[in-house]
Image 1 (cartoon, rainbow, N blue to C red):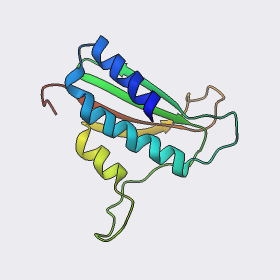
Image 2: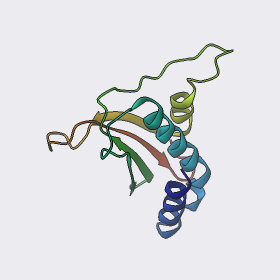
Image 3: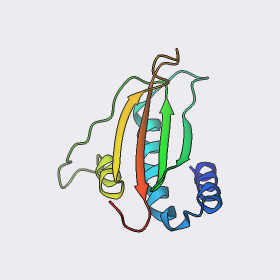
Length: 121
């Protein structure tokens, strides 16, 4: 996560989106944690992150080779895990999942989240 966060911070600074850093770092952390925990893939099929500036802010993408799709669920109050996508949904304007490279021959999925500047939601 350390290198991914450094890359995210550099991108946000270069795009003038530093105000999104805290929320974006938490969203990125949750998406990467989910990918590492649930997307068990063979060596050579690494998890990839992408950051894309949008008209309103930032899109974060986490690509992996697993076809298992994450599901938003409300965990029990005493559960030790299961809150990652709840946090993503609370911080992001929108989030979702799509097939990886839609028809490009690369198996897996992309989990994405979009964040806006200035509190616009």
